[in-house]
Image (cartoon, rainbow, N blue to C red; front, side, top):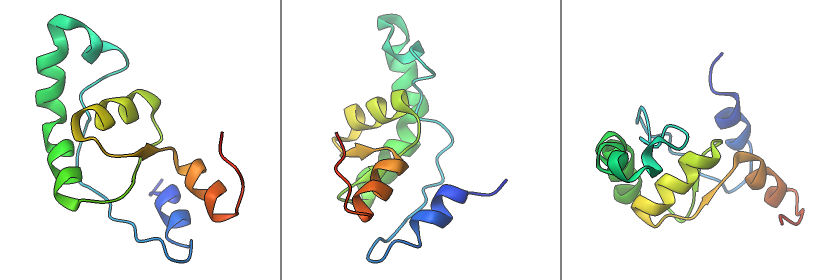
Length: 95
């Protein structure tokens, strides 16, 4: 299937995409929000979090809502959906 969202975002003038090689953010739906599963969730997502922090990017993009919450929580990064980036590139307001 490839990575069509990345291919599309790379076509936006001025946007530099860095694809991280993380497997999972660790949240697994609501799994990581359970008090007893939080530490496991954060450990699973650690490789993703470390890569995002190391990049010091102004923005991180993910198509999963709960993953965006988890990554933002763990890294402090501003997270958006790929469609939001496309909307911004076309000058459309994102609510």
